[in-house]
Length: 259
Image (cartoon, rainbow, N blue to C red):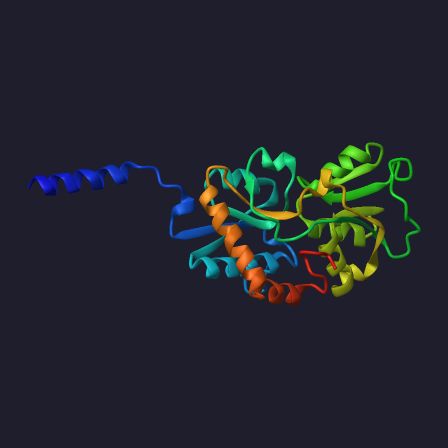
């Protein structure tokens, strides 16, 4: 009888202990679903893209059951902190500003930004004096927006809820230029009809103040076990060739080297 009571008491104690989502069997992955080719919806309503396939490979490596949750970019960190999901896998730059709110894994991409202009544009130099009064677009709540606000105070800055919306206004002639991540911009220009309007311009933007330390997965600061597990899984899929196979489905460059 005593042993039975003791067992029940121990079981009850464990039920009262807090269990972080990071230690649970399932992992919920937050992504945007509006940033092709990294994350987007297919015609039949499924999340797909480089980020999604990397997430699936990481889960397989960790032997975890994972699910994906779509979240608008503006709320992607607040939703993580509110426990809507356990990790953000959405091509997020690792920056000091974001490190104050979340912890990051090792980079799973290198990062660079670029200006994009109409293919007939003569613009090739980008500074505040040159762009004074000109309309420059970027997705809001991004490092691109931070970059423009810091260095182009005299330009007509326009921020949009999605990257597709920025692309549309540039293609329609409502913008003189936009700033975006290098790889998505290159893919848009080379592989879509809409993107044939435009070209990359100027030098790639690699200032770590804005592009940070690469692109990583974000977790809550208390979920260090999950962060370590993700790092181990990432190293494994890079070593066994899974990462490269996924990379080659979407890009001609290696995302770890940008070469």
